Each structure stands twice: as C-alpha cells, then as structure tokens.
Amino acid sequence: MRYCGRDFTDDELELIRELVAEVPRRNRAQLSRVVCERLGWFKPSGELKEMSCRVAMLRMQKDGLITLPAPLCRNGNGRPYTRRTPATDPGLPLARPVDKLRDLRLAVVANRRDSHLWNEYVQRYHYLGYQPLPGAQIRYLAHAQGQVVALLGFGAAAWKIAPRDRFIGWSPQQRQERLHLLVQNARFLILPWIACPNLASKLLAMTARRLAEDWVGRYGYRPVLLESFVEAERFEGTCYRAANWIHVGATQGRGKLDTRHEVKLAVKEIWLYPLVKNFQRSLCG
Image: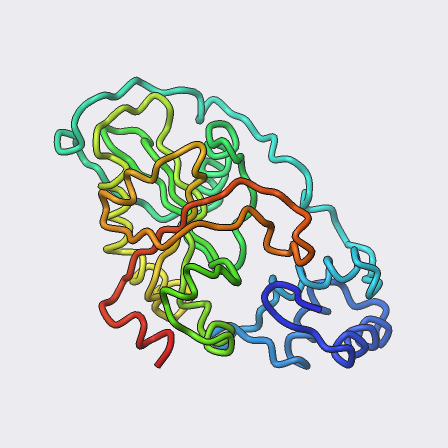
C-alpha cells in the first residue's frame, strides 16, 4: 500500500498495529515518532518524517487497515478554512508597470500572524481556495507600495508525472530517492485589485533566485528543480513562459491515487524551472 509517497508492506502495517496496541495511552504524535524510528522514515535533513507519517496513518485508518487512538484535541483538519478578517479586505487598486512599483519584495511566512494572513487571502481570492501544502513547504507574501500584492506557496512535488519524469530521465528508484529535490509551486495568487503588467513573471523570477537558499535555511538541503501545474482551460501559462520556465507536456486529467482510471480531473500543463544547470546530474547521477 502506498501512502505519502512511501510503500508499506504487510509486515510494516502489522508492526504499526502492534505499536498502536503496545502502549494504549500513547497519543498520535508520540505514535508517529515511534513508527518513523522503527521504519527508518527520515527527511533528507535527518529529522523524522512525523507529519507525513501522521497523514499516512490517518489514511490507513480511513481505509480500515489500522485503528488509531482517539485524538486529544480537534485541530480543524478536514474542515473548510473560514477565518475572515478586515486584514484581507480588498485594498487600494494598483495599476502601474512592474518597474515603477516601489519596494517590491518577497517575505517568507515565518510567524503565526503572516500564516493566518496568507491562508485567509488564498481562501478568499484563489479559485482553489486554501488547503495545507503537503510536506516541506515555504510560503511568500509579496509586498509593494506598502501593501500585499501577491502570494506564492511551494510544497512537495507530485509523486509521478510521466512528461516530467521523461524530461528528467530518472528511474523509478532514483525518483523515490530524490523526489525531495523537486519543489512544486502549488499556489500563486495576484490579488484581484492589482493590475501591474509583468508582475507575475517578475515575482516568479524573484522567487527562483532565492528559494533554494530559503529552503536550505529551513530544511538543510538544496532543491534543484521547480515544477508547476497550470489548468489548461483557465490559464495559458504566459507568466511561466515569460519567466523562462520550460513546458514539458500535460497531465492526463487523473488524480494521483486514481489507479483505476475512474477519476476525470482538469488537464494541467506542466512547467519546470531548473534552479541549477546540472539538475539532471543531481537527480539521475
């Protein structure tokens, strides 16, 4: 069974059941740490993959494979994000060329206040709404003229995408070992009252120049390739093309867990951006 990018054998599932029964008073956070240690499930930085493990076990429970202890508190998982404050009400209209914007800058979301602000903006104004980004992640607030003008979010890459994987040229084993070196641009929102030509491509270029260093500072390793998926019926991907991203194909319109070809989703164009010249050597060498 595959959960969160990891294959679990029958023996490993049985081990998880034993660990659940071993100490009934062990909470879910403690259990995820023990499971990671016993299975040797670590991040590239050497830390335990606790959050991925917790998500995996929740999905195992949903599939009837294990029974977890009851949660100690409700954390809102699975419920729509409903927070709404005046801080994300429409701001002053801004329409000027990007090279005329004053103090255009990116700020990493690094505290609770900015996190709520990012989540709230995305929930209110992005067509997909807010969902927690998977795995390792970095979010940015873009400021100019004294206000927030855009938001970007980067998280874990898609597990398996045929056109991307052909472009990279890696084997399934290499993909499993080095997928963490890819980072997905999962959210990109320019606020509706901002109308600045070339702002989107400018922000993509600014992000590409700094994301690797920000990622090293947070997670201790350097990604080498960015990916993004653009819904073909909604957008043309013009800003990615202008920012020198590479178009490598399109998805098949299936969900990531749709092994029976039963789910029909929107087709998305696949765009990649190398962060280093020798990215294929890092992924395949």
